[in-house]
Length: 228
Image (spheres, one colour):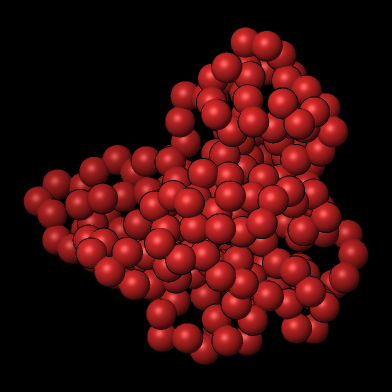
């Protein structure tokens, strides 16, 4: 689970952001979809009780998978793996991974046992957010969008998130339990979703939610630069 990007606790020295990834899963009609969200624990250090997307830090298995002939980046891998760990659902397609990759993570081995592999092709990179330099815990997170066509399993709170729900997007956007950056990403996701087709657009620039001199700044970058 990625701590909220709007956290601004003071710290003497800026820390290097940890690479992370989160997955926005939408389902339902184009004009009124639901979004999969998990509620953070009430004891969480930042934004207790707030709703977030499943996700977390990039780990060694994600890097190893990305370094193979698998068609995704370490961020794709982390988004899929963390969603499986936190919400009990996987984004996967028929196929297998090399034996040395299967043993690296329980997610990979569970999918392989079902004749499936993580489906990087089903994910669209839609946004990036970097925690303010004033926060003692920092993440540089890539956000991905997908639908449910390649989703396996039923969303269930099985990890760090005590509650996982399908929430109407219109409700989420007006909720006081979603942070500004979470709503920003949801707005990016909804804009693509409402086109109804052509979800995967490699040439589309991605907006980056970040901070400069304490002020929020939104800039653009290419998808290839963001996933490098």
